[in-house]
Length: 200
Image 1 (cartoon, rainbow, N blue to C red):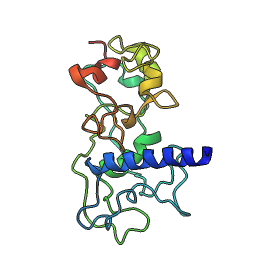
Image 2 (image 1 turned 135 degrees about the horizontal axis):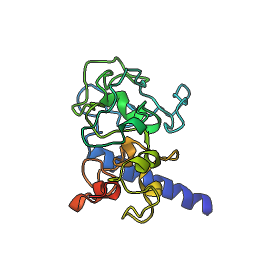
Image 3 (image 1 turned 180 degrees about the vertical axis):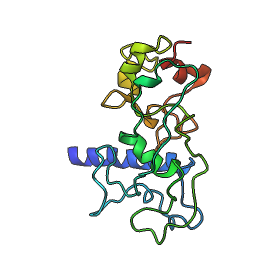
Image 4 (image 1 turned 120 degrees about the vertical axis):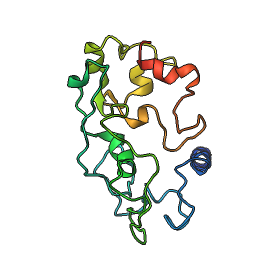
């Protein structure tokens, strides 16, 4: 009986994730990009998946190796405290969003094609990514402490940062869920997601 319940829960989660992706910009099933597959551009369920990145279960897409421009801020005093080499889940997002790889560069695809995502990330001017939040908060008085309440049920560390205490793309975005629009992990009404970290 327990096995049946667990299976039903897993299936329910899978169906919900599929429905969310289907209604988001991460639905690449149209056109000739994926041959109708919705999960394949990112995940490969069998042998041959890339397991070199711990945060990338059964990864299928080619990982970026592009040299990225360092983040430069005209307002923050913490730029020097930021190690901005992409790590963790950010590397996965940049596989499509840095503009160096096409959507079709995944295992089992017929060809790389020329289709690129519309939302490219300029790492020099976009929100900084892959940095140690606590280290930046120490030198920037406009950033809340990592242990502060995020407003989303727990602390900034637990609700917004990865396991290494870093800000990643997934600190704000969930690639599988579009319930809040723009693939945001929480409702950003009244800029709640921004002010969780920024003391404004």
